[in-house]
Amino acid sequence: MPEYLAPGVYLEEYDADPQPIPGVSTSIDDATARALIERFKDLVPPDWTGFNESDPGITLANLFAWLAESVFYSSGATDARRKAAVRTLLPLLWGPLVRPRYFEGQILDPATLEAEQNYHRNMLRRHNLAVHGVGVVSGLGVQVEVSGDESRVVVEPGYAIGPLGDEHALPKCVALRLPVAASEAFVSLRGWGRPFAPVPTSNGPEDPRVEEACVVAISRGVPATAVALAHMVRGPAGWALDTEFVRLMACRCGD
Image (cartoon, rainbow, N blue to C red; front, side, top):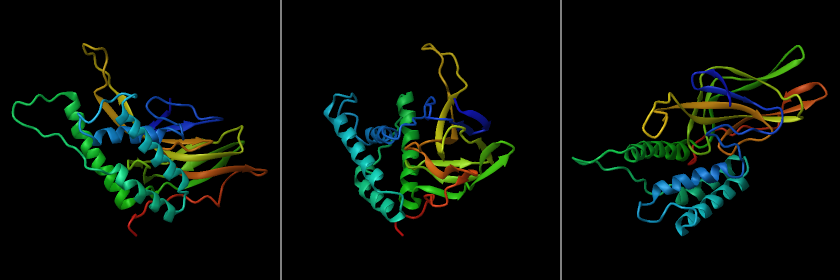
C-alpha cells in the first residue's frame, strides 16, 4: 500500500522492482491497454456484443488497444512524434460518447448512475488530450536533497495531465527516499481512485466513496498510466538528476 501523506496524496517508494497496489496497475505492458479496452466498451451500444473475453467484439477491442499502445510506445518522447501518435489514435478512441437519457418512471440503478459519471469523465479526458496533451502543465519540479548519509528526491507542487487524459494535482511538496540498491530510478505521478468508508449491505461491505488521489512514486520504470517527472542516476558522488532527461510538457496538439 502507498504511504499516506496528505488528503489525496500518497507516496510509493521502491528499493528494487515496483510492487502492485490495489486498484493501480504498474505494468508498463498492459495498464494502458486494459484502460483502453474499458473505454472502448463504453462507446458501443449494449446490444452490439457480449462483454466476455471470448466474444469477437471484445477481441476487436483488445486488438485496437494493442494497436494504440504500440503507436504510443513507438512515438518516443518528442513533442512532434507524440502529436502524430495522438492524431493517429483519435479515430480509434474518440468516437461518439453515449449518455443516459432519463424519463419519468425510470428506475435509476447503480449502472445508470455510473454511466452518467463516466460520460462526463470521458468528455473531460477527451478535452484534455485534444486541447492540452499529455505531461506537466505547471510546477512538479524535482531536486535532490542530501541529509547525512540519506538522499531524498523532492517534488514540488504542481499539475499534470496523464496519458489517459486524467488530471493529477499535487497540492504540497513531497519527499521520497532514493533506493539504496539501484543505479537509476524514475520519479512519476499517476492517479489513484481509492474506495473508502465501507458500509454494510445485503451483499457485504461496499465503499460508497472514491477518493480521487494521486501517487508520487520512485521506481525502476514508469507505469504506462503515469507521467514521468525525472530520471535519477547514481554516480561516484551520489544521486543526481539526469540533465539529458526531458520531461513531457503538456501543450496544444493543434499547434
